[in-house]
Image 1 (cartoon, rainbow, N blue to C red):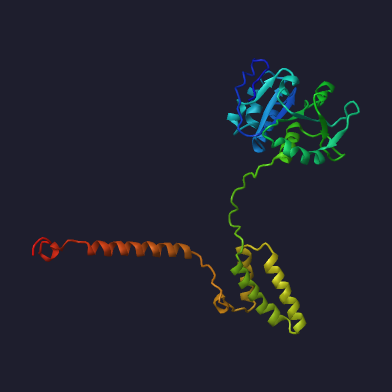
Image 2 (cartoon, rainbow, N blue to C red):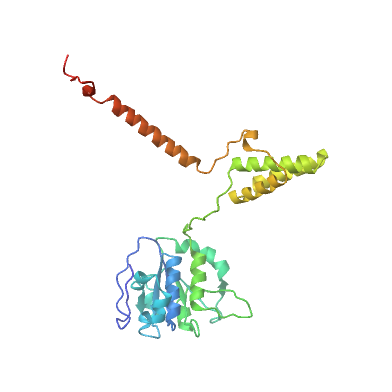
Length: 307
């Protein structure tokens, strides 16, 4: 459970937060830009579960600023869960491991490259018994010495020497993305259906018929072309639309081979729907026949009770 221990001013009091999943905590020290805070909130939802805590923000009304509301659009419910503190000590009181991000060396302390540190921290961030804190400094000067002293380790994100300044919200997004351990969500890919094995077999046979039997003539050349085709249809990430294009080419070049010539049963478009409709029609017919046979014999003018 996380509770705001900070002031209850224009920022509003933070609610009790109870998490039934392991969480990470992003801590922004003295943030100045409402747009950065809003974008960081979105990142915490994209790559959560993750809490967002603020320490002594420069603007008392930062969470009601129009820029914050614009950048956190779609995360209205998560806005109320942001926790605000007066000090970094309060923000880290229930955290087990604290990592600070700084582009500048601090008191001769060793800073690890984030790309090397991230794999070690993924299991920490996913441990239900621990809370991993990720501490970021203000946009202008980054972490100060006192804030860095609260961190068990310091890391830096490597950038191009041409431009070493990394936006705060972008930094948070990079870090949370690298620590994201869930399976995640992926929408269905429309129109990208993989070619099944029967389709691959037919495509390979048709290619061999044309290229191995008609284009080259020596046994060695036919063997090499045939093996190449076998590798292609077995390993290439072919889709149905790829096969369709190949069949159009092969037909244009003179191939007349069909799946039935090879004893291959290829799924026809609408075949499942037609089979389903046929089963429904058969069921209706059976029910109709049963109803006819169960009709009383009054139609013949006789009562079933009359002898």
